[in-house]
Length: 437
Image 1 (tube, helix red, strand yellow):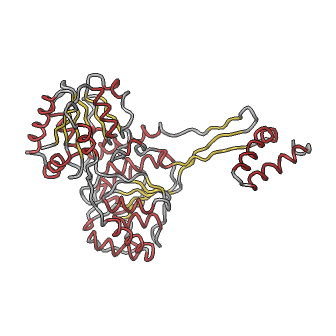
Image 2 (cartoon, rainbow, N blue to C red):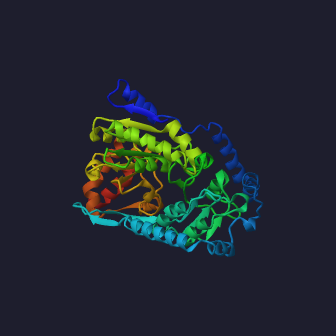
Image 3 (cartoon, one colour):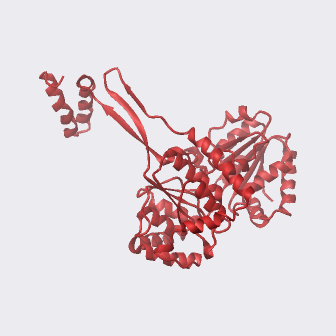
């Protein structure tokens, strides 16, 4: 059974805080293992990657077979059923249309002192996209990572997707093809992250690494950050649903289970202003767990980390949601738009009972790579901007330097940075002599 909380009860704040602070991943030894793997890949390159792939994925490779060949890709894509191909193509189309609108604009203007200022945006040169492997891998993750990078204009895109026992998911290869990516390395884990960050004789290094993965991949991304950029350190999936009594309890139960089935460490929370409705949802969850294919995983998640919270009203629900800063937030209420205006922290918001979070995972358009573990308080989901850099521009005229240069010289002097001040003063002295104006 999940945790039941009521905001009217004594000690509620402490219990709610404890719910949010539950440790859902306990991997104290992972970082040490990952450090050794990264060091090995840096020292031995391809040889280390090949040995580690054989150990963890039971797959023997050579430098020539690290990447999936074009013939293999074509052969696998040909096995995709037409209905699944059409669905993936539709998803790619919608995801691309959404992300094209995120492209930022360059800017340039002249201020009152005559200085020309601005910025320009340019893509990173190369990006590596990590895709969890095996037959349970997710082609939707390929689209969500690759399409924003492609829209941003990244020049070189590669994928690392492990293929345990040599088994690749044809839909993953099709998703890569639809995203314009031809280079797919059949390696995974911390060794794949290290290879993309530092390079090997066969795998050229990239500038940015994105994509989900297990605890070893997350730890590797954390360790290589600084050498390369990363999107985020993602934890177990989570969903928070705010729902009033005018909903089908079974619908809400399925929405909660849609995240619980991801991982035993996932967290699903319902906040409602009607205790009886909360009980009805809990019963609907239990009924669904009797037949759900991934009931062992979903059941463990719901039992260990699930919660149903009863509140006085929807305003209080919004306050608690902001404390939780959930990865996914569903607003299944009469006026979801109005309630959304009270939400300040959420990775993605799904408005109304006809917008299940699962639509966002596949075909809605917005990105499904989202901040977890309350990091929506300070970060955003993956976007085109994650694959671009902003460079500022500044150009002084003699008149502009004469107008603002003395203030710069004063500030440099106050910081005891003599050369800073002198670099401005030398130009001002030239102007004061009537030269260069």
